Image (cartoon, rainbow, N blue to C red; front, side, top):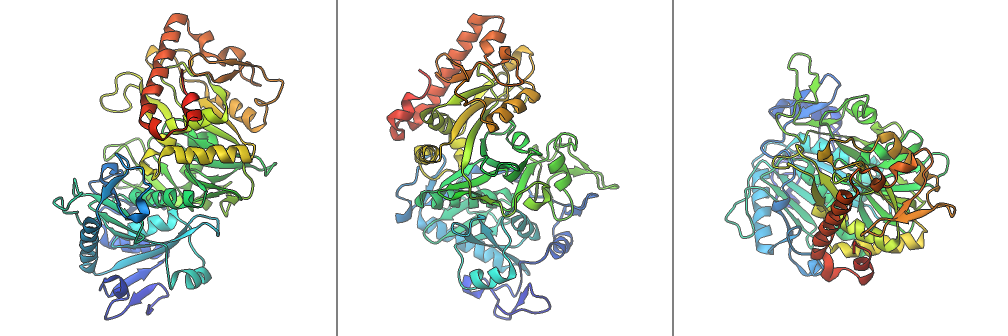
Length: 544
């Protein structure tokens, strides 16, 4: 690649990306933040600098992922894929057509951007990612979200070969008449050619989760467990590492952010036989209703270099109104991990998790604030990935509604959930790890009864007790939760004993019993889809 004017501007008459069949003459490779700011402001409509220094962008029609438009190319490499609603097959011919459309579109642009990054902080397991895109917004986003190589690493690792390339032509639509296409949006992954093609959606989160999907494919092949979780580590005891799993609204970000613990990462990790590492080099935080007093780390991270998507702001002051969701409820900000004060950089630890915390927000009000899980129960509830939505959170939701997402990240799984659950159980046993189900939702009655959620101060005390190993002490007494068979501790330091079993809090004990049985039935109904690939041990650990 020939360089001119700067060490990141590539120019040649034949095109510096000719080996990709891209003839654009001007390409900017790994350009600095300030330059990408300038490019986005100059060429991308709707871009502006906010009062806090962050750059605000627009992602067009799509302000969230399009999971129904994700495709996996069916090849010899994908014979063990868990095909179905999550992984929809695309033939190689359809992929070639999509790639041709993407390359053709990129060839019409006057300027392109390349971003070279690592996915994974562990040198033994990281992969080299290259993005080719027409938007400076996308280049800056991926620079923030993945791990920036040093100049030496760029020369040694990225000049001759890469592991996966992303062609982001999101401004150009897919052809709906192409076999396998159902809309103008398409995110297609080809594990044979190690390529990702994005058409018809400019939402940057597709790249983030596309890379995560790639890691969900590659890591289990090496007997490593890829996880949709947050991870932190005690500042005093480096061997005290914890993993947090939880769907939206369960408190995963809040509870894993702790002034006494290092943050290894907030969303995507891999557990190997040598420890845990963060896949990403940044955070992609929700901005809905963001306040400094509630989420100080996230609020303060929104500054120069951060990318804010689809927010509403005052045209005069450039102050963001985080409560205005008129563009989308999915307002987001992407910022580097080192913008968090207690982040651990590099985001990797040689120690193994002592505790796994599965978070749920039970709107039915019947699950205890904390239960201790056996290895088999951990597999069952890991595969189930349960939480509940409450009235008003989404259009059409008028009462508590159970939500399940396999392994707490169903849209990104490649193999059957049991494969990831088996790896989880193996590592739990090998490294003497304990698992807990923590309910951050309702315990005195259902959400529709008008009672409040379990107080956050008590949930934090429960988490502290888990970190401190107090719940697993031999002196701890337990009682069984009906139908589920989960172990409820009778005492947790700092938490009133009466709060530990919801049955004690419900005035109508019969209504509680019916609600608990109803929820157990929902678990069994959901798990039926996994029964063919689940182990007998896992099946037996579910509600009876």
